Image 1 (cartoon, rainbow, N blue to C red):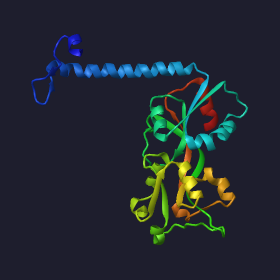
Image 2 (tube, rainbow, N blue to C red):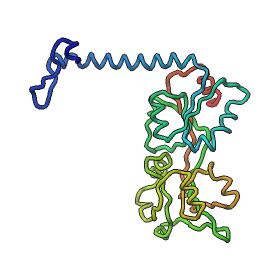
Image 3 (tube, rainbow, N blue to C red):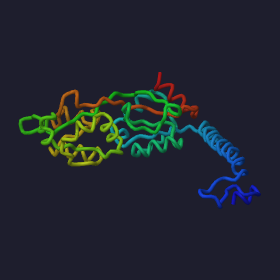
Image 4 (cartoon, one colour):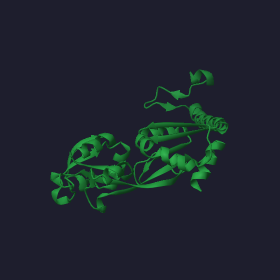
Length: 259
């Protein structure tokens, strides 16, 4: 036990509620200093290890990894060669946690200013690599018109294919619209992008989907916007990184894409 190592009682267990003894009060700030130094040393050691690596480590959400990352990375890299690339995909929450643990150099994901977000500006910085929009879309009928068209007047007749609140696009969607504006719509689903897009293509309702994902479906006439500009959500695909220095190869890549 800590008290055995210190050699004196640190907690008065006879008090209600339990309180620190005078020795405990004197010990606590020094213990916090030691823990802070250990955490700082941990980050320093990780940074030193990362400095020597020639691998670029990326985190992305599943949508970005499938629809955007390959082409973007090829263009961003240009003629430059990288020995090894490590790409990990996860939910947005998983990506945030991994970045907080410094498990990757970069996070590439959709972002909307004002959405709930764990990567504070004091510890992370970012650049915009692509502008995107979250569009409300509907399947078309036999005449080529949208099956559903959004308006407050017909809200009770439009099935809303909604994201889970904690999903990345769910956070963006619910940050962009006041709850009162959506309360009249019939919410018929709450899941991830692939399922919602499939339901929209089947004519089951209106789903908000990134424009970068559905360009081909819209050009082919399988999907149409289900509302005017007031129903679309402008957002960005951003590349995030920690503010502290990364490996030489990661810093070189950052200079290239942020130039």
